[in-house]
Length: 114
Length: 113
Image (cartoon, rainbow over all chains, first blue to last red; front, side, top):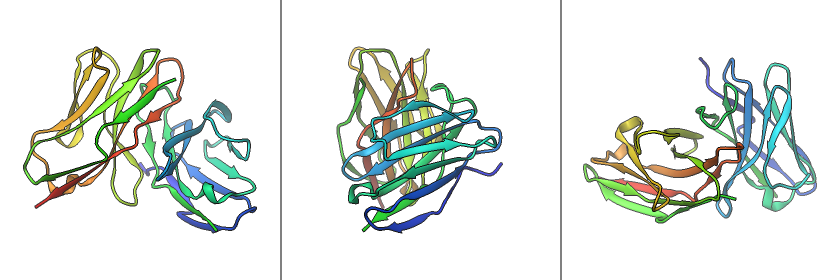
């Protein structure tokens, strides 16, 4: 089976712009979670989608949003980019999203905001 | 809310030596515990997890961890490390009642020849 894929792998944007990141889960996985990784704040949970519905949400401002499509692919959008949004954005997929399941992570999208 | 403290930000060790990466957590509810590894320019890979049962958990690549409820710890160990174990290691907790996984700040393990 193919692993979790994320596109693009690298992205450069300027302050005030918006960005959309994409995540394709492992075939058959219906849960997709997103994480932000920065040197200062470490790994932080953004949100989780299951069957096209946001099921859990971390403590991030409304500029961060996401959605999931019927084929379980997910997108994450960040509007009005700030310098502090520069980070590695990771997505992870699992069958149904319970904590007892193993999450499989993609390689991440590295976003640089100038 | 939960929190995770990884007591060492960096651990240098020589090849074939044993290693222990320390993790303490705090939580007002019961949690599941995880260790992940991140190689350069890659995502995270699950090493092992504690859900219930035996407090000694064996994972991939020869790693194991022991859950100590009284000390709220979940330390990761390997009896003999290889150069290829050089990576960043993250301890994480997730409460029983939701998917809000909290990660520690990470421990950079460097294995020297």
